[in-house]
Amino acid sequence: MNTRQLILETTLKLMIEKQNSLISVREISEASGIATGGIYHHFSNKEEIYNEITERYYLNFYKFNIDELRQIKGNTKEKIHDAMVEIFKQQQTGIEIESIDEIDYRIILAILTAKGFVHENFQRLLQSLLNELKEFFTEIVEEGQKNRQIRQDFPTEDIVESLIIMYMGIAYKWEAYIIDDMVSVFEDNFDLQWEKIRFRE
Amino acid sequence: MNTKDLIVEKTLKLILEKGTIDISISEIRNCTGLTTGGIYYHFSDKNEIFEAIMQKYMVDYMKIDFDKIPLEGSTKERIHNGLLYILHHFTDGVEIESINENINYGTVLILLTATGYSDDEVYKTVSQIGIDIGIFLTNLVEDGKRKNEIRKDFSTKNIAETLYIMYMGVQCFWLDFPNEDIDLIFERNFEMTWQAIECQ
Image (cartoon, rainbow over all chains, first blue to last red; front, side, top):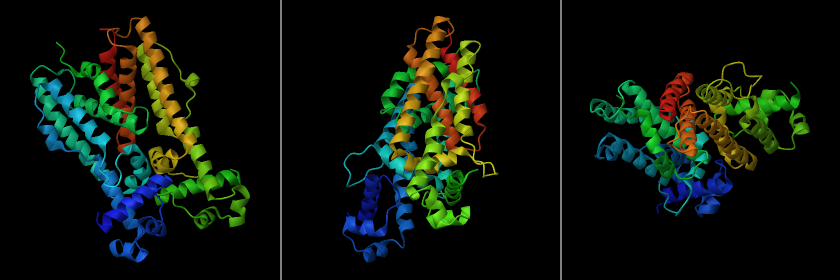
């Protein structure tokens, strides 16, 4: 691991240990064995370390690989199902941290939430993710409406919104520790979710 | 307002303005007009101020008195009004007297989250409210099944979960996109969810 990465991961680990996002450079130096001078060689101040941690482990967490979702084949119900499973799987795994084998990623999210939300790019990132998801599901829903697999008595955008609300609801229940496994809750619930939007004569 | 409450509110205001819980005693002194001695008369240290903030704006805020939720009418109306009551309870938040401008309570929650999760009482309160909302919905769904207003070919657990997921999705939307019309999103999603669970 290079020094820069070591500084970042050490700081993140201290945050986890202390359950607090406020860590001093002295603490980072003690825990990493890198002199404060060495730390300042890579980062001009504490804020810069915080910022990079937030970008890597919080902002990146909310991005998903839409291109991978576009590869999914099948009928409308299968496509929606498989895409959702893929999204939940990607999220639950979180971002890889070299020096930590296994961690409940929610711990990192909780610690970084405040920093993430005030990050200058976060609102824009959320908005563009929402738009990407909307665009992705709109294609599937439009096709499904045309093929009489999805109900036509609601506008496409309302159906798409209901899918996104379902995704957010499961993700939020997980983040709030109400459920532990997004995929299994989704699987248990998908048939009834499908009832909301399936084609009606 | 008494001095103790003033310190708590002004500190929260600072947290909102700075976008961080990293606040010093001297900053609290400046915005309250109190001396350090005056602050320490009410709180033994900075942590105690944060604890008071967590108690008021997270723990007390989370508590819902389910008996107060007005439940009348059909099963559809009862579930609709119950969920809307809970949604408004959370989006309205705790009143902050000394801040005149309209603040989004979501911002308060987000800024306090990191501290909140390391606080056992907040953690316990959050899990308890999660369980309570689940029970609240389960009871309404069971009742609706008995009255033949909710379909019986899906389990009560499934139906309550679907409603709960829809509700949480709307609440999450409010946190992430504070400028959207949350009531409208709730109404649209409630209607579609209801059509899936009503007696067919």
